[in-house]
Length: 446
Ligand code: GLU
Image (cartoon, rainbow, N blue to C red):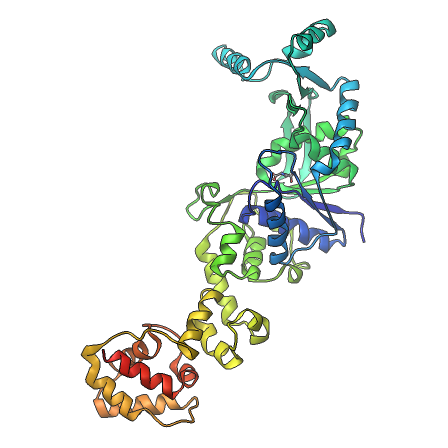
């Protein structure tokens, strides 16, 4: 084991979507690549929005993707640690009490805007005397607490974005503790990264400003910022370059799973997204050697569900029976799988083809084809059937009816499978068997 330690820190306020999954995969792959540790941390200090069922679902979804972790914890288990660190910051004058209401702050922001100044917090609370603070508290006000940012520019070498700077004087002092005593993620995350020995923070580009602020808090708590490496993954957009966040509901891992998407397609696609590499479906464990943060482009990456589906299709088409048999309908054998895999977009479609092969389907009614179907029924060969049966039968039928191409094949396919398109009948017809085929031809006459 190396001494590198990575973490994935979702807030259990909803289900994971492809954006979170991409971050989780990157952290996991990098940790495994260097023989480091991977920690799952649940950022659940927002008590109103965090739900235990989301925490359970997050773990389930990560496992489904093929990710595991060396340890995990919830932030609400560590409230005492946050109290201690907050005390330290109060003692050193970095955390100061504030009393302004939302309305007052909005008013002040507006006034600064009118004066042509940036709408920054003016640190008025920092100028309060101890007596004024006492008086405010005696008057029934409860303070919330802001962190006093250093007047400097924070710099770091980002693993994806290159050299990055954040000018702290251009940011309002962040609130770290709410009036009800609850902690904000900006703070708890730093305490955890420091105390759990995190060395690498890989997360979304939306956290770049946070990184500047958090490095300042990190140092104020006695951390050595050089210990931390950061990598910010550019945001995902939808296929047209628009904000993906609006569609994240449909891009939830749960939804993709329900749709029948293979986890390997998702992980392979997300690992290659925004890089020069061509995506190939692959389980995380098969990408450990090849993944590289340096290959990720600095600009936003497009998440295109059509590309993901195409990847899934290619993957299924080559998937051996052994890899899939557990997920197929009861009774499905290798011959069935090999006959249908080339026609699947999603594995869930297999059950429809299983019904078509071994169960019941509604043949397309084609009264206009009655005469043709009658001949088809009469010429239907006796069993046993094999891979030659279809060409022998359709060949003979073609000769007798002088039909060929679509006019010959489409009515048969519709009658036998209920569909216009589907598996090659050479391999599929023997799966249907004579009895079912005969009854479908009869039904299809209408
Ligand atoms: N809980 C934060 C989020 O989901 C974590 C960000 C981070 O990785 O520090 O955005």
